Image (cartoon, rainbow, N blue to C red; front, side, top):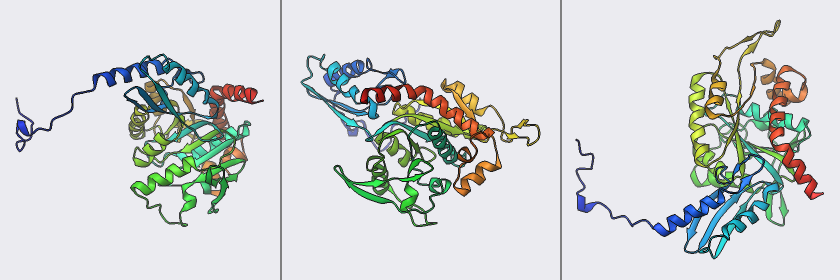
Length: 365
């Protein structure tokens, strides 16, 4: 059998590794087991599986963790402290609450590759949620193609800052009732965002933590395509409670989406549904669908993930024209076939989250 060890390294040259701390490992497992007994009622899953608990560490007799939640979930911190008090060895648990002030539900819109209509989907979904009475914010974090300002008619508007008790914060712009912030607003017109490493990380973190959103029912984050540094930073630094995956029907696009799924699973963020864009071309006379890019990809992915196929958006010239003009089709013609598709997707999301929003309002009142 071949020996794959490097020929330039003898056995006695191999680095020594410290023996595992069995007590610390056992304690971390005990902490994780207790945390899994805490169920988030809306998504009906435990806070560990939902990725709300991050950076969990056990140091001697102390437990440290970060809890990523929405505005209505702050009581989970008290539940964690109560549950962990059962541990006889734990002197104190330190729970750092990580949230976006005023935001109840943060959702990510993601795709495995560019060019599948992720930003168009984000804009029309934000409009659809707003038309159904929700307070909506849209964060354009796509550093490779920050097109949302143009799609909402904001062009190259200037970003302003205000002074608050927490320090200087960005003031989001507003378009068609949607609060908007975009990395594209920081760049010179027609110039690329040539950011690397620490600068990219800092800017993205600021856009998540230093925007004065006010009270929002939903904050949609339009992620960059793929699974690079920018995507990982956004996912790790924000209290995203779920992701919507946008794909097109062909198998090449589906393969790229699968790679994104692995990233979200690694941090425990659930996939709430699939949106299949460019599903088919509708005949202008009879309405008969023609699958230009194949068919069945979105349904196949939904079945693999055991998650719903929330909608199939057809190819339609008005979608593109409306985006170019800054007046999304769901806004200008909500009763159209395309408008109804996005309104149905918004309704499906609202069925999941609306009950908790109403409950939170009742408690605050």
